[in-house]
Amino acid sequence: MDQKNICPRFEKALMILNHRWNTLLIYQLLDGPQRYSTIKNQLSISSRVLTERLKELETEQIVLRTVIPSTPVIIEYELTEKGYAIAPVLKAIEQWSSDWVTITEE
Amino acid sequence: MDQKNICPRFEKALMILNHRWNTLLIYQLLDGPQRYSTIKNQLSISSRVLTERLKELETEQIVLRTVIPSTPVIIEYELTEKGYAIAPVLKAIEQWSSDWVTITEE
DNA sequence: TCTTTAACTTACATTTCGTAACTTAGTTTA
DNA sequence: TAAACTAAGTTACGAAATGTAAGTTAAAGA
Image (cartoon, rainbow over all chains, first blue to last red):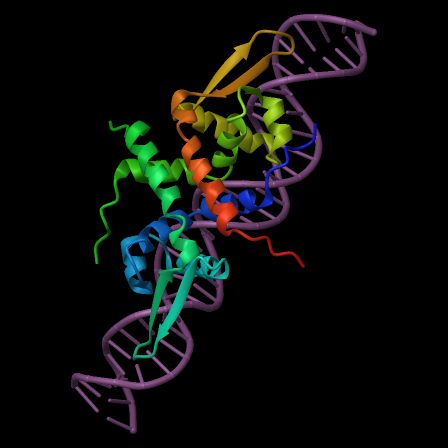
C-alpha cells in the first residue's frame, strides 16, 4: 500500500528533464552557446515560457547565462558541464526513436 | 529565422517521454506486469490521469493492457518490447542523476 | 437485499501554458 | 530634439492540462 522508495536524486532528475520544453532546450544548446533570440526562433516556444525555463535550468546549474554588454544587450546561454552530461540521455532517446517510433500519417 | 530540422521521430519520442508521469510510469512497469491499483498505489498519481496516460501508452504500443476476467475484474498492464526498449533512457537518467544531481535541503 | 471491490468516470477547482501586447535603455535616423 | 529601432524580457489574460473527490458498474459474498 505504500510507495516504492524512488531515489530522490533520480526523481529530481525526472522532474527537471520531464518538465515541458526542458529536454528540447538542452538538445538545442548541445549545438553550443546561443543567444535568447536564436533559441526562441529555433523552437516554437513563447518568450514567457522560454524565460521561465532558462531560469529554471540556470538555477539547476544546467545552463549558464552570460550578459554581453552591447546595445541592445545580448544574452548568451550555454550548457554547463552538468548540462552537457545530459547528452547520453538524449542519445538514448534518439536511439529508441530510430529503433521504435513510427510516424502515423493519414 | 526558420526552425531547425528536428527528426520527427525524435520529436515524437520527446513528446511521449516528456509527457508528465509517462517516464515514471514506464520506470514503474520495468519491474514487470502490474495491475492498475498497484501502479496507482506506488505513484502519487490520480486515477483520472493514470487512466489517461495508460491509454496513451497503450495507443503508442508501449504498454499492453490485459483483462483478467474475475470479480471484480482485474486489469494488468505490462511493457511491450517497444516499452522495455526505453530502459536505456531511464538508465542514462539514473546515471546522470547519480553523477550530477544534488538535493537541496534546508 | 446490502455491501464490497477493481477499475475506471465525472464534475469541478487549481495550476500551467500560450498569445499578444507592452517595457526598458541605449542608438541610430528624421 | 524627438521618433524609431532592437534584444531580452514582462504582463495580462484566456485556454488547456492537471489534481481532487465523489460517483459508477457489475458480479459476488454476507
